[in-house]
Image (cartoon, rainbow, N blue to C red):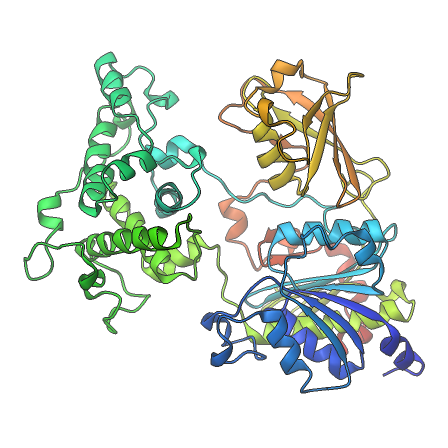
Length: 585
């Protein structure tokens, strides 16, 4: 270690956010480098799937707090370190700007964009340097964020998560992913907190079916009832749910004859045959079936493809089991890709629907990967990324932000042929809607379509990333549309924005007290937008081509949940790629 840095390291106060794949390696590196005061925050508990790469955890730790176990085992490397472990969410209002100001530096080891956005804003508000990181398979990234000197995490547009029109999911799926999204919506409709936006019944208002016969439309309207209400009315009977979802609903869809003029029509399932097991016996849905042997049969691994009969058996068992779990807990369930029962329900439902629409079936492994947007984690990648984080942190503590770099890790780099590629840090984006002097953003919507609730939940919170927003109309009246005080604007959440005189050119002001963040939203009216559609100026759409070009260095700006590349310009790579100091691990 460089002379004079020992004291600075020992006296610095470090906040580490995340104790997963990168976080475990990072905590170990910090205690062995000489850091004495560390706070570690992570909301997760240890899952058995973590054990192959998160080396601070063992089998006996499954189910316990990641932060607390990481602390216990990191102290074995150096017991003279003060580590405060918090099993909590970094988005908790307790961790306000004053909390962040107590730290010398913040190190991110997160796996989701929501938390990254939040930590980015808190560090900007507290004027504390942040080292951001991410990994996905053999790809890795580390970058430094310093208020006023570098790009912030949100300076460059991120591709939004790919979404699909409701009518495609409910009426005309053509790909396995459409069926998987439908199956996740079905789980939410049956077992999770009710959300009318996740309805899975045929959509009679599909614009492609508008000239369907009056009789057919009336028939569909007569059967229009929420999936949750219908399931409750039949006491979650698995056989009746199977018949409704994969026979009756598909027969209703066939009556929308316009939909099938240029498409292959679906085929209602022949339940008499599908409800028989491999021995020709009728399948029941009691607990003793245990998924008709699927769950306990060691031959049927995740990578093997279930037959349609096995999918039906799995569906029947998982419906009954999940319903009993919900009844026992007396609360709604939450879908989790690591919950085997929930995952088996989604996999079986998706495959049965795919079978009806003539779409290839997928294995449980494939469906889990698509449903959870999973890229396999590589322990070596995490170790290198964690080493690079500490390297950049040491430069910051030396006061040499000029030496800091954005570092991208590639396997089989097509241009430089090197594993680690350092790039100069970019200056702040003057048009960034987070760190610019006057943050503003243009939002293209249809004010006759978007409700106050949709504006708050889908645009302000989910897309822009505010936690507790207050929104008012900047027209001199000070009319409050959304309040962070619970219940204050509850009576207007279902009103359309046009009801309040909002139109093309209107300006809204959104404040988040927790993030110390104010944003102006300038409205662009677009009558062609419907069904909750919106577009934010600068958004980068997610495309299939983009996801298939993962190794192209020109794609360094694309983002995944577990990997967010920096905005490194290709022209700058060669001028700094031999900076040896950057790769001292």
